[in-house]
Image (cartoon, rainbow, N blue to C red; front, side, top):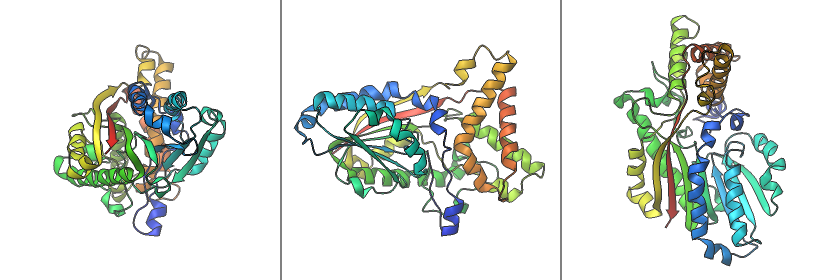
Length: 365
């Protein structure tokens, strides 16, 4: 999952936090949505079988992954979908479109040896662009869109760097209702933009599937322990004089986990409701994939240390570049201390990082 530039060209260079290159190898919890969303996607393919049968062999069936990172996380889903499409129309070409702002080199490492490429008749290309922007390359051609664990990241391109700042917290879901309001409004604007662009790209009757991270109340928002630990660590470093107050204020992860009610309310607005029909809508909890491997063995020092290392590494993968954005020094020596302290916190107080999800299917009208 990924973020965009801000304001001036100089700010754009400064504020481009993205996932690390190994994100797909440490996202086991995120991958657990496959067993829930795959049946819905296969049921959709079955429902449009007559249309697939009639498609010209030279007109590709287009599938897009928005917020794709390197493409690994959606690969198993896409293999299954393509298998069902081929059972209906064996001659049909498949075109996969991967969209994110991460550097393309990660995708280039994945694709050549992927099982998808080896299926034959499958072409793929990567569009390095914000997934909130238009993809004119596929306007009116998209059959199936997919986005997983991406749409909680706010579009940073249209706001200044000072938008993502707070004197005592590092994430919107930690804030009071009044302080959080501007992030809620920003999320709504971003979502409306995302849905408008996807509607322009999709064929009539096409489907958009989303596995969105959500807030289900209290501390039931994704990886809340990771965010809260980072906040407390950065606060401690500020009190100790190791980071400046202005740095502490500027350390912020620019995302917002909307509630299922907020998502449904937005989809019922005039714009989205005229563009899409809601197929299914389900909220669910996916237990932390890492914590479950060690539960019951935490009295063992090695197991406890391994869990702490893993959890700290997972949190670092999606937070490090955002944390760096708030730090003034070019070499940012505080980073290693932040994540060492995070590892120590997880060691002394093992806590899982469950994901709260809202799964959606939208059919283009």
